[in-house]
Image 1 (cartoon, each protein chain N blue to C red):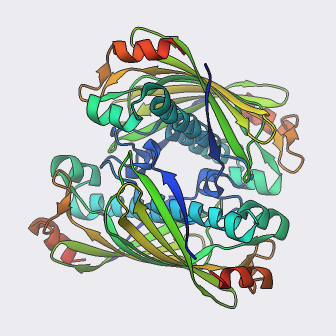
Image 2 (tube, rainbow over the protein chains, first blue to last red; image 1 turned 135 degrees about the vertical axis):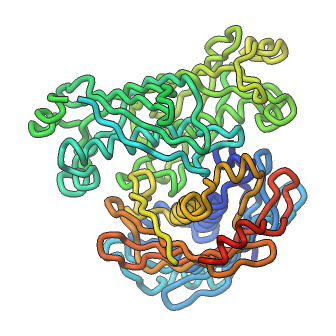
Image 3 (cartoon, one colour; image 1 turned 120 degrees about the vertical axis):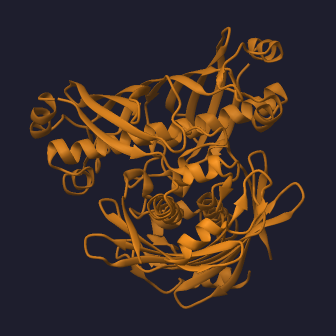
Length: 135
Length: 135
Length: 135
Length: 135
């Protein structure tokens, strides 16, 4: 199952070259992950953090940028689960220009399951393992 | 006494028009306030928050923008205390282009003293009242 | 006529105190202005800039912050035209928490009409004067 | 030869978990690259873009995050040239906590040489090839 969300490129996201500043592409991936948790897991990411004191910080990133996004574009970010490990989840993000579905960037990211109070890695809770494993 | 700090304009601070995106000017003011606390009060702002659970969120802003800052500029931000109230401090920020001291923006901001745990306004502690009142 | 748009508060918009970092509130106002131009003027702001070489940079800001927005909130930003001057437009932005319509911030901003090539103020074009004046 | 620059972690760089939001780490890398060009090549990055219409957008990223940076930290970013290709340069960034030199993140990034007017890849100019090759 694929999940996708649309993000409009904002004036403030773009740099003097007229392109989306590349760290902002990673922000778009995080936004898509937040939407993914709300839609697929039934737990918005803010509640995951606040109520369960669980977070999924990014610990490993690979990314390729194929085509620029510019001001006026809308991005479509597809999120797929590549792997559910013992204490991490690997997501693949594909960032496309919504108008013509040009692939602008692809990023594979390992997110560690982290206890936010103890600030250390923990096993992915069974409930999330089950939901994410179906993806 | 005036206090000032220099901030280099970064590529990612600028918008497609080539100018510093105006919300970033307010970020520069906050950076200058952080430097002010470290230099004048002997308490870096992060320790103020962590150890004393005290913050000074902005509750009122006036700002005028006179000239743009562009990529390649260095900003010089002057900070002055305009008023120390019962539970607030008013700072005036002047943002200048460092190379020729052109005044680019001026902002007057009221910062409330806030207990970060209770999330409510508190009196400005005597120690800070004394230091800020000398400015 | 009032115009409003919804903006979900993102993880990356919030600061260590758990609140939306106040410069980001100004970013939300700009996003709402971008949406306003697309919806009301029939010209998305990116085309206004690219095709007509016209921009509306903010030159004067007043803002009051009444209540915090936190991670998990959705903001509703209402935009109203307060005044159409010779070479400027004054917008009033009201930022509310969408769930209970609490007023979190109100900002009045003067935007100068600017020729982006010459980088100087120009009269508000008749077409926009007419549309904005009806608001 | 190694090059390094120091960047103070700002309040607005941090997320509700109290850590530097990971896209901001990539911003720090870009800031370090800007400083690298000014120091090593004698051409500040803004002039490279404006006068020579040359840019080095990031086209490939690998990054690992080992330890968090938190508000109050100062980052030290070391920049090294790993490879100078026909039309690209590969930089390695090591982001350390300045106080104890803990390695917080390492990122290898391929930057394409780009003609900013034509928006296409170009050979790395001989002058920069020579300077970067010595690193």
